[in-house]
Amino acid sequence: MKVGFAGLGAMGSAMAKNILDAGHFLVVWNRSPQAAEALAAQGATQADDPTELANVDVLITMLADDAATWSVVVESGLLGQLVPGAVHVNMATISVALAQELAALHQARGISYVAAPVLGRIDVAAAGNLNILAAGDAAALARVQPLFDVMGQKTWHFGEQPEQANVVKIAANFTLASAIETMAEGAALVRNHGVAAPDFLAMLSGTLFNCPAYKNYGGMIAEQRYSPAGFKLTLGLKDVNLALEAGNQSHTPLPFAGVLKDNFLDAVAQGDGQLDWSGLATVATRRAGLK
Image (cartoon, rainbow, N blue to C red; front, side, top):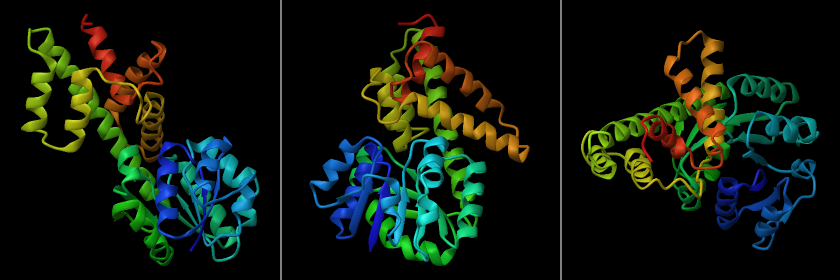
């Protein structure tokens, strides 16, 4: 399969490498060319401009946010030059509103559009063990499933409208951010009563919440290990804002999302925006008068 891949951050690079290693012909582009050069050295073809990804069977984009996605896919002219019959798989976390707009633009051009954001950190992406949250036309999804199989351990299907996958990803990240916040507040509470945070968090992740999210993020909070960032705190703020936007669009109250937004803003205002988003715990620690 001839695959174009735009957006080679840490996650995108790991995903693209797995596609290349599976034997697919891969054309890559990144705004900063160094990431594309690394893959080119391993056998990919490096594009100098996004429109050079147009002549592919499948275009995959893994870009930072709405603005980057719009710039690369629409403003560059890439969408207008995609060959008939191509499938565009957008694996980024974007707003529901943009997902709907992109679906309409692709339909008008006769190009299949699938949304497939992912769950998993960089090491999970490198191992090909992502969980892929997919929505779109069934035939288009079937065409790209072989690519999902080399990037992820499981593909979860959420409907025929691409934005359905995006709202699932937004809701999942909102729920995960909420878990980080409650672990942080619980840890601050027990510390102010003389109990060590690592002891509390180890108990929590080994009993009531015995799952990877609580084990991984609980461990990071216990050790105050927020750098290097696997998922930056500023991206957590972006995703909470996307949840609030989706809630406004569908008249869905999300009161705790408002609290999370303020706490993320607090952390960013303190200069912690480049920490891992588990660094949200610094807010609860500071407010509790702890070091």
